Picture 1 (cartoon, rainbow, N blue to C red):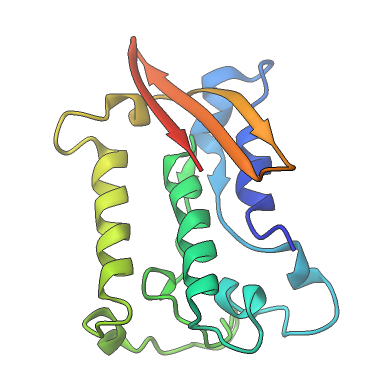
Picture 2 (tube, helix red, strand yellow):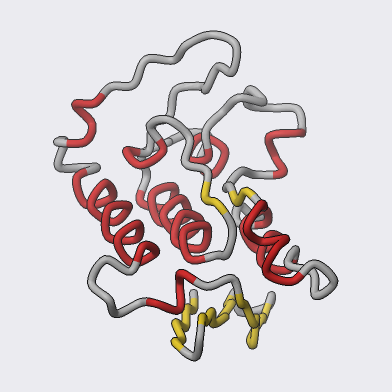
Length: 166
């Protein structure tokens, strides 16, 4: 399963015909194409779809955080689902409320992931005045290797650059 498929396709979704105006209205989110196949609930969260037997495994955590890093460094408006920053694994109900267990934010198993979201959001907002490239709408994917599962791209705004790789 390519769990970052939606994030990666959003990187390629920036059309030269629409330019920067298009990316200002585009919402970027991370989900899996598996959510449209039989198996786990279609409202299952990403960690559940990544590792159906152990939603809190290292594998599920690493893949989920990689998807978040791509989402938060892509142009567009990032959409973070309620509890995603704490790797919430309970099914998300669009029509029924799903209470969030905020104790997970202080849990040592998830504290680092919550901090990663804080750090990525700070980088995206250029709060330390060092990542101005992430505030722009320009994007160039300069490396994609499916065989080695690597992706590298850079973003820029007014000559300020930010380069990401996974």
